[in-house]
Length: 396
Ligand SMILES: Cc1cc2nc3c(=O)[nH]c(=O)nc-3n(C[C@H](O)[C@H](O)[C@H](O)COP(=O)(O)O)c2cc1C
Image (tube, rainbow, N blue to C red; front, top):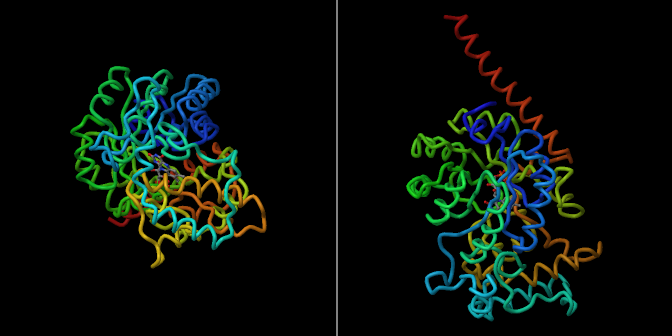
């Protein structure tokens, strides 16, 4: 399974694992792949703790950090979302004012229908909390993500990844000056070309099958198109890859490795436990639906009462990023708390991003076992194809 990317990073297998969970990141890196920590939900303080922990557990082996710095978000042109000079935080109040009352009222109606009680006062999210890691604004503004980046670059990170477009040029240049490779996710050829132009080293061609934010084109079509468009830059295939056969297919299409997300949600080391894990283990591909209900941009999520509600006729519609997540932040917290009660209807609303490969996630395994199974199945798939060539030669 070796490709030039293995030499670039000093890894044994070109399996890149995106996870918000530090234990998964370390486990994949230690098994010979490359773990990449999703920083989105962490405050700068918490990110520092997570990265220190990873440093202590990977013995100098390479790992990466993923930030979410969208090319476009509501209020960006008006200058919202910048970090304040004195605190380094983003003031979320200006964003909160952009959330229409009609949407907040409708969310309340849905919560009522599912008997989700209000939050106890100590659980409320403070108004104006923002920037790099809180339930309201997360890291998906310039200021929020830059704060996370400052923290990440103090650690021996070997790969910096951005979702939702190429990172700004100054960030790419800074990473390069520190000998850090830069990758970015894309679901369309024209965006991949823009990334290459901006200086991104590795393009992640992510098909619509993927969990999380995702485009409309399937991996089978997208990967070779992007490989051809950005050559000689290396491409990682993503979206719908949870096994060695799927990895072999992506690499047959020209990818130099695979970028995976969903498959790590149900490993032993993952944080998702209890109800969410049960739902993931039971779900099939049709249960992974594309919805704007999480962030305002299309993202593939587990189908739940919540995703279905946003499709109803009485729904006023989703809001642009970052307002949608902010509008739902308190509701999500209420649903999470209420769902701890086994009798609560809030359990019908609980879900998370996941891709169509959820169909293959049927049992809990160790991360290292997943990596070894990838390798085994990859070898068998390549041997099977080789066998076809040999059979053809014998016939000739
Ligand atoms: C729960 C979850 C959260 C995700 N969050 C992010 C994120 O914050 N940043 C990012 O670049 N990609 C994110 N993704 C997308 C993954 O990086 C990856 O591209 C995708 O999972 C690959 O497709 P797969 O789910 O079929 O493996 C997320 C995916 C999942 C499943």
